[in-house]
Image (cartoon, rainbow, N blue to C red; front, side, top):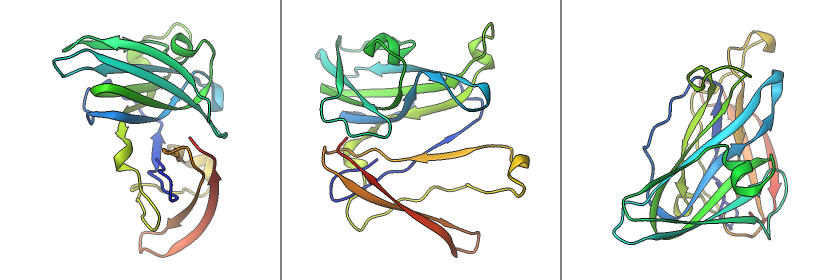
Length: 207
C-alpha cells in the first residue's frame, strides 16, 4: 500500500485454500489490497466477498471506492452504505453488487466511525461449493500503515522453482497508492543469504 512520498505496502496473494476470518484493523480509512471479479490464469474464475463490522455505538456511514488495477483513479466509483452500531454487513460478489461490473483492483473504505473490514478473494468452479474454493483472506489495512519515502516493507516466504512449471504456487505482489498523488516503488528480490538477485521500479498514479 502506498502513501504519497512515494510509499508502499506490498500485498502478496498466494493460491491456497482460505476460510473467512474476521481478524482486522479498525480505522476510518482502510484499504483492501486485492479484490476482483472475473477470469484469471489457468481457467480460474475469481470473486470477492467483503465483510464490514461496526464495533461502535453510533451508525457508520461508509463509502467504498473501487481503485481499478493498472491505472490512476482520481474519480473512483463510489458505493455508500450505513451500518448500524454492532452490526456486520456481508457483501457477496462485492465488485459487481457494489459497482455494477466485473473488475480487478483494490478497495478504499472510508467511514464516519471506525470499522473492521475483511475480504475473501477466491476462485470457484461452476457447481462447486464455497468450501472447495481456492483463494486468500485479506484484513483491510489502515492508510496510516502505508510506507513513505525512504521506508520499505518485506514479503517473506517467496521462492522460485526451476523449472518454473514445477512450482507449487504462483506468488503475486502489488502496490496501492493511498493519497491521490503519484509514487515510484522499487521492488527487489533477495536470496536466502540476503543477496539481491534482481529489482524493478514501478511508477503508480494517484490511488
